Length: 253
Image (cartoon, rainbow, N blue to C red; front, side, top):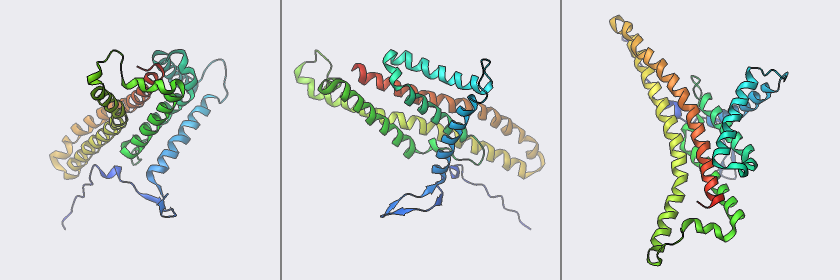
């Protein structure tokens, strides 16, 4: 009898699967695995925060310490980039940091789904933040907000060219913000799947190869630790850039 080893594609883990089809006036509102894990990430974040208040005492428990660590990291980020004016935006920035961290870490669980590995999610989030930041800038400065695209002391002949360049570099922030998170999470998970598949193939082959499968398996464990660090780092970087972009419109940099 011939045995065939079926090797799945490393990109299969990013496939959107419809769990509950919903159509409304020709629009697709179906519940997918992406929707499910996004809601699950929000539930995990709320549950984790609630644990920190469970039997709250003067001596903090482990959940309180973790929450206070994330709180301090976010507070320092806001203080360093926005100063005192950033206190108004702390709830949003802290929530953004917490949800992205939950999505990234939840995606590290085997057979789960990484919401931030899809460009539609990261781009939609980045575009929403970009629009909100511009609304804040326009409300704060009025028509002076457009001075962001025209630095002082620029010679008149090159004003149109400079405005075009500044506008392009300003709008490109949406793409860099979304692609950075999407690319890092996608490439990392793809690499993990490739190494895991390679180790399983060697083990299934039997013989001497089965012994040497420990090499890619050890590499896989190292990469998992690295990917966990990247999951936290990318959530931090996305939030940090949001603070920087917000500060740009508040101070017209």
